Length: 419
Length: 170
Ligand SMILES: Cc1cc2nc3c(=O)[nH]c(=O)nc-3n(C[C@H](O)[C@H](O)[C@H](O)COP(=O)(O)O)c2cc1C
Ligand code: SF4
Ligand code: FES
Image (cartoon, rainbow over all chains, first blue to last red; front, side, top):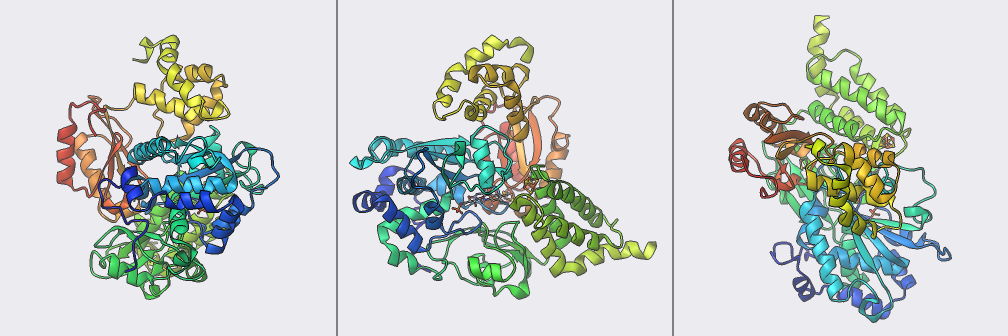
C-alpha cells in the first residue's frame, strides 16, 4: 500500500491539535505558497496537478478557481462544503474530527488563490464533534498567525466562519448551500450563472469539498510530481474511500484511484459479511450499483463514468447475498423522496410515486406492469429534474431494475397467479 | 412552558448571542439559522414567540424566520423529550440491522418513531444517514453519536440516560 497522507495522523489521539499537525509538516505547504507563489501561480499549479473535486462531480479544481473573474470589484467567497449527507459517506467527518488543520490550511491556500478574505465552512448540524474540532483548529490557527490579518506577514488576510447546517441533504448541492448561508430555505438555483461568477450574496464564489481542500497542503508541501505519481494520470492524488454495508471491515481507507471495485471490497473491506457479494454501490447511493460480475470496474472518475456509474463521494456500499435488491431500491428511493426539496415536479411527484410502487412490491402486493411503471418514472425524472438529486435518484433506481429485474419479478409473480 | 416566557424574556436571553452571530455575515438574514440554533439550544425547541423575537433582533420579516425553521429538519417546532434518539435507518445501517433496532426501541419505549414518551423522557425519530456508516448501525443521542449498536447496547444506553438531563448525556 502506498504512503498515507490524508490519514497519516488519523490514529494519533492528538492529531487535531496544531502542535501535532505542525510536527508532521503541517502549514509548510502554506508557507511555501505565501513565499514562492502569486495567486495565479497557485491556480496554475492546481490546474496542472489535475486535482479533481472530491465532493461528487469530480470537477477540475484549478479550472473552477480560474472562472472567478479577475476584474470583478465585489468580494470573493470561499465556501467549504462539509454538508456530507450522501448515504454511505463519512470521510469528511473523520477528516474534520481527527485532523481538521489539513482542511483549515487548505482553505487558506484556496482563499489566497482566489483573493478571498472571508470564508464559510458549512458543516452539517449533526456533526457536533467536527464543529467543535474545526472551531478549535480555527482558533489555534489564528493564535499562530495562520489566519486573521496579514497571515505570516504575506499581506493576505482571511477569516473562516463555521455555518452550521440544520438537517437537509439538498444543502450539499452547491447553489442550495449558498442559499442556506444566505439564511434561506436550501433550494437549488438555476445555473448559469455559476457560483464562480455570481454565488454567495451574488459575489464570485468557489465551493469545494472538505477532502478536495485537504489535499492542497500536501500538494504544495510535497510538490506536483509526488501528487501526480499517485493513481491514474487523469485522477491523481490521495483519495479516501468509505467502505460500509455488508463488508467485514467497514471503515475509511486511503487508496489510489483506479483500484478494481472487487479488489477494494475483498482486500480492504475484508470480503462479504455473509457468503459472497451480490452487488456494490461505488460512490454513495446516487451512484448506480454494479452486480458482482462487473466488479473489475476501476474506481476512478473516468472508468466509472464509462461503466455507467460514478465515483461520487467514493462511498462504497457492499451488498451480499442476503440483501434484497427491491428492498434496497425502496430504501434508497424513500431517502431521495424524503430529501427532495419540492421545487420541481418530476422529482417531487415522480419519487413519491416510485416509492409507493416499491413499497407495494415489497409488501407482496405488486401488480403486473409495476416494474415498467418504475422504468417509465425513471425516464420521466432523469434529465428532466432541476438538480442532480432527481437525476441521481432515477439513475440509481434504474440500475437496480436493469441488473436485478428478476428479483422484482419474483416478488410480483405470486400476485399475478392469483388474479 | 412557552406561556411563561415573554417576548422581552426571549429577546433578552438571545440578544448577545444573536448580535455576535450577526457580525459573521454581511446580511442580517444569514444570521437567522444561527439565531434559531441558539434559541433551540437554550429552550430545547422553537416555540411561538421565538420567531418574533429573532425577527425583531435581526430586523427581518418574521416569515423569513419561519420559512427557515420549517425547512430544516433539525429545528424542532414541537416539544421534544428530555433526550432525542435519532436512529439512522438508511442503507448502510439497514444492511446491519437498524430495522430490528427500531422495532426494539419502539417496543421498549412504547412509542412509534416520531413520538415522545408520555413521561417526556425520550423522543424517537428514524433519520437518514448520519454520516457514521463505518459504525453502522448508528444512533445520535442528543448531540452525540453511538455506533456498532446491538439491542443489548441500546438497553444499556437507555438505562444510563434515564433521568439524566440532555446536557450531561454526552
Ligand atoms: C443533491 C446533492 C448533494 C450534494 N451533497 C454534497 C455534499 O454533501 N458534499 C459535497 O462536497 N458535495 C456535495 N454535492 C456536490 C456539490 O454540489 C459540489 O459539486 C461540490 O461541493 C463541489 O466541490 P468539489 O469541486 O471540491 O468536489 C452534492 C450535489 C448534489 C446534487
Ligand atoms: S430535482 Fe428534487 S431536489 Fe432538485 S430542485 Fe428538483 S425537487 Fe428539488
Ligand atoms: S447509513 Fe446509517 S450512518 Fe450512514
